[in-house]
Image (cartoon, rainbow, N blue to C red; front, top):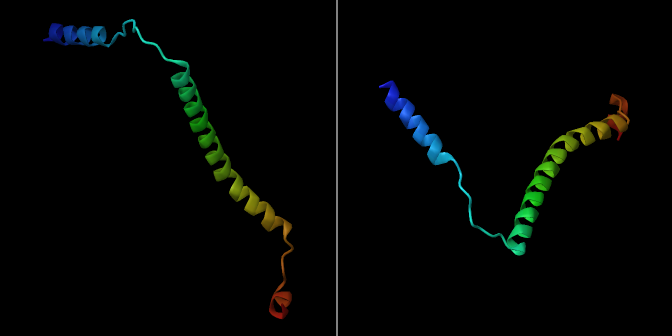
Amino acid sequence: MRIFVLLAVVVAVLIGIPRDAAAYIGPGAGLSVIGTVVSVIGAIFLALVGFVWYPIKRLLMKMKRPQKTQGEAKTA
């Protein structure tokens, strides 16, 4: 039984080893891939910055505004 499992693992590894590919990526396709990768990375970065920056911005604005007292709030 162990020999069959070992043989199955060896066959799976040998099947998974890549061989040389006779392929050509033209300049248009290559630039498209590069542009897509840069765009996705930029979108993720901007989403993270926006997700972190917005709460910090609200906190800073809240700290900057003078707090109204109870008497001022009623007369205003």
